[in-house]
Amino acid sequence: MKNCLFILTLLFAGISLNGYAQDSKKEKQEVASQSVKAAVEGRKFTFKAKSATPSKGGVIQLTSGYAMSVTPEQINSELPYYGRAFSGGYGGSETGITFTSKAFEYDVKPKKKGGWDVTIKPTDVSQIVKLFLSITSDGYATLRVTSTDRDSISYSGVIE
Image (cartoon, rainbow, N blue to C red):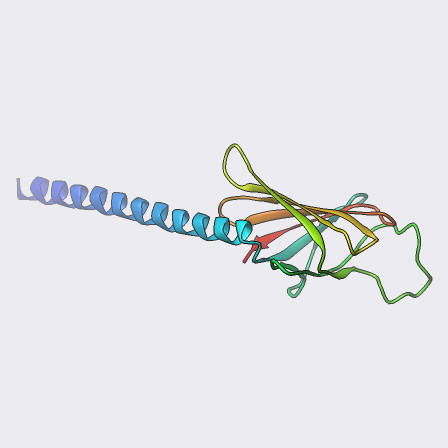
Protein backbone atom coordinates (compact mmCIF):
# COMPACT_ATOMS: atom_id res chain seq x y z
CA MET A 1 0.00 0.00 0.00
CA LYS A 2 2.82 2.35 0.87
CA ASN A 3 4.50 1.51 -2.44
CA CYS A 4 1.32 2.38 -4.37
CA LEU A 5 1.00 5.67 -2.54
CA PHE A 6 4.67 6.46 -3.15
CA ILE A 7 4.36 5.65 -6.88
CA LEU A 8 1.24 7.79 -7.23
CA THR A 9 2.99 10.70 -5.49
CA LEU A 10 5.94 10.43 -7.87
CA LEU A 11 3.61 10.20 -10.86
CA PHE A 12 1.70 13.37 -9.90
CA ALA A 13 4.96 15.22 -9.15
CA GLY A 14 6.33 14.22 -12.55
CA ILE A 15 3.20 15.39 -14.34
CA SER A 16 3.23 18.76 -12.60
CA LEU A 17 6.95 19.26 -13.31
CA ASN A 18 6.41 18.34 -16.95
CA GLY A 19 3.64 20.95 -17.19
CA TYR A 20 5.96 23.53 -15.62
CA ALA A 21 8.72 22.71 -18.13
CA GLN A 22 6.29 23.10 -21.03
CA ASP A 23 5.05 26.45 -19.68
CA SER A 24 8.64 27.63 -19.28
CA LYS A 25 9.47 26.56 -22.85
CA LYS A 26 6.42 28.41 -24.22
CA GLU A 27 7.40 31.54 -22.30
CA LYS A 28 10.93 31.40 -23.73
CA GLN A 29 9.56 30.95 -27.25
CA GLU A 30 7.22 33.91 -26.77
CA VAL A 31 10.05 36.13 -25.51
CA ALA A 32 12.24 35.07 -28.45
CA SER A 33 9.40 35.74 -30.90
CA GLN A 34 8.80 39.22 -29.46
CA SER A 35 12.53 39.94 -29.67
CA VAL A 36 12.70 38.89 -33.34
CA LYS A 37 9.54 40.89 -34.10
CA ALA A 38 10.99 44.04 -32.52
CA ALA A 39 14.25 43.62 -34.43
CA VAL A 40 12.55 43.05 -37.80
CA GLU A 41 10.04 45.88 -37.43
CA GLY A 42 12.68 48.20 -35.96
CA ARG A 43 15.09 47.48 -38.85
CA LYS A 44 17.88 46.56 -36.46
CA PHE A 45 19.17 43.00 -36.87
CA THR A 46 21.94 40.87 -38.30
CA PHE A 47 21.40 37.89 -40.57
CA LYS A 48 24.14 35.30 -39.90
CA ALA A 49 24.49 32.96 -42.88
CA LYS A 50 25.07 29.27 -42.10
CA SER A 51 24.74 27.84 -45.63
CA ALA A 52 24.49 29.00 -49.24
CA THR A 53 22.47 27.48 -52.08
CA PRO A 54 23.39 28.64 -55.60
CA SER A 55 20.63 28.51 -58.23
CA LYS A 56 22.53 25.71 -59.97
CA GLY A 57 24.15 23.46 -57.41
CA GLY A 58 23.89 21.99 -53.96
CA VAL A 59 24.02 23.39 -50.46
CA ILE A 60 27.38 24.77 -49.32
CA GLN A 61 28.03 24.92 -45.58
CA LEU A 62 29.66 28.22 -44.55
CA THR A 63 32.16 29.05 -41.87
CA SER A 64 31.35 31.78 -39.38
CA GLY A 65 31.73 35.44 -40.21
CA TYR A 66 29.36 35.77 -43.16
CA ALA A 67 26.55 38.19 -42.37
CA MET A 68 24.29 41.00 -43.50
CA SER A 69 23.46 43.68 -40.95
CA VAL A 70 20.43 45.96 -41.24
CA THR A 71 19.96 49.23 -39.40
CA PRO A 72 17.54 52.08 -40.14
CA GLU A 73 20.45 54.00 -41.71
CA GLN A 74 22.21 51.34 -43.80
CA ILE A 75 22.72 47.74 -44.89
CA ASN A 76 26.15 46.08 -44.81
CA SER A 77 26.57 42.77 -46.59
CA GLU A 78 29.57 40.44 -46.40
CA LEU A 79 28.33 37.23 -48.01
CA PRO A 80 30.15 34.79 -50.31
CA TYR A 81 28.91 34.14 -53.82
CA TYR A 82 28.83 30.80 -55.63
CA GLY A 83 27.43 30.71 -59.13
CA ARG A 84 27.66 32.19 -62.58
CA ALA A 85 28.40 35.87 -63.15
CA PHE A 86 27.39 37.47 -66.44
CA SER A 87 29.92 40.30 -66.28
CA GLY A 88 33.07 41.21 -64.43
CA GLY A 89 36.74 41.02 -65.13
CA TYR A 90 39.01 38.04 -64.75
CA GLY A 91 40.62 37.93 -61.33
CA GLY A 92 38.50 40.77 -59.93
CA SER A 93 38.42 41.42 -56.22
CA GLU A 94 34.60 41.58 -56.01
CA THR A 95 33.69 37.92 -55.69
CA GLY A 96 30.98 37.99 -53.01
CA ILE A 97 27.74 39.79 -52.24
CA THR A 98 29.65 42.64 -50.60
CA PHE A 99 28.10 46.09 -50.44
CA THR A 100 26.95 48.95 -48.23
CA SER A 101 23.66 50.68 -49.00
CA LYS A 102 22.41 53.86 -47.35
CA ALA A 103 19.36 54.31 -49.61
CA PHE A 104 16.92 51.41 -49.72
CA GLU A 105 13.25 50.47 -49.60
CA TYR A 106 12.26 48.20 -46.69
CA ASP A 107 8.91 46.40 -46.62
CA VAL A 108 7.74 43.98 -43.87
CA LYS A 109 4.70 41.72 -44.23
CA PRO A 110 3.59 39.29 -41.52
CA LYS A 111 3.05 35.67 -42.58
CA LYS A 112 -0.24 33.91 -41.91
CA LYS A 113 1.32 31.22 -39.70
CA GLY A 114 3.80 33.47 -37.88
CA GLY A 115 7.02 35.07 -39.03
CA TRP A 116 7.66 37.82 -41.56
CA ASP A 117 8.57 38.39 -45.19
CA VAL A 118 10.98 41.29 -45.61
CA THR A 119 11.75 42.79 -49.02
CA ILE A 120 14.71 45.15 -49.33
CA LYS A 121 15.50 47.04 -52.55
CA PRO A 122 18.77 48.99 -52.43
CA THR A 123 18.53 52.06 -54.67
CA ASP A 124 22.20 53.07 -54.48
CA VAL A 125 23.75 49.66 -55.35
CA SER A 126 23.40 49.01 -59.06
CA GLN A 127 24.16 45.26 -59.14
CA ILE A 128 21.70 44.19 -56.38
CA VAL A 129 18.05 44.20 -57.48
CA LYS A 130 16.31 42.75 -54.42
CA LEU A 131 16.96 41.03 -51.10
CA PHE A 132 14.11 38.85 -49.89
CA LEU A 133 14.17 37.55 -46.29
CA SER A 134 11.72 34.94 -45.03
CA ILE A 135 11.94 34.95 -41.23
CA THR A 136 10.30 32.55 -38.78
CA SER A 137 9.08 33.71 -35.37
CA ASP A 138 11.93 31.85 -33.65
CA GLY A 139 14.61 33.64 -35.68
CA TYR A 140 15.49 31.25 -38.49
CA ALA A 141 15.70 32.93 -41.88
CA THR A 142 16.28 32.40 -45.59
CA LEU A 143 17.76 35.22 -47.67
CA ARG A 144 17.36 35.23 -51.47
CA VAL A 145 19.48 37.70 -53.45
CA THR A 146 18.67 38.67 -57.03
CA SER A 147 21.26 40.56 -59.02
CA THR A 148 21.54 42.19 -62.43
CA ASP A 149 24.79 40.46 -63.40
CA ARG A 150 24.74 37.14 -61.52
CA ASP A 151 22.55 34.09 -61.00
CA SER A 152 20.39 34.33 -57.89
CA ILE A 153 21.56 32.71 -54.66
CA SER A 154 19.90 31.80 -51.35
CA TYR A 155 21.33 31.67 -47.85
CA SER A 156 19.98 29.98 -44.72
CA GLY A 157 20.80 31.28 -41.29
CA VAL A 158 19.58 33.01 -38.17
CA ILE A 159 18.52 36.50 -37.12
CA GLU A 160 20.40 38.04 -34.20
